[in-house]
Length: 101
Image (cartoon, rainbow, N blue to C red):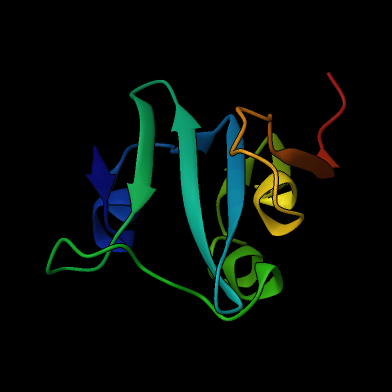
């Protein structure tokens, strides 16, 4: 599922339980928002994934919303880079922010 900033703005008291900032190739980042409606990818009005130049830019864009936890997610292609067969390795997750319960 996808969501735009306008759709997010129109939600009644939007709360983001988990903001995942996914690090992509080419020094780009995308945002996955987890909340009561499930996981949604932040997109533009044309339905394309909205790409950002930094994790900070995503956090600034969403700063007016209640976000309970933020993680930067960085997938690793280490096995392939050193000539090994691709493997199912969990991405590295860095907790950036978390509200106290």
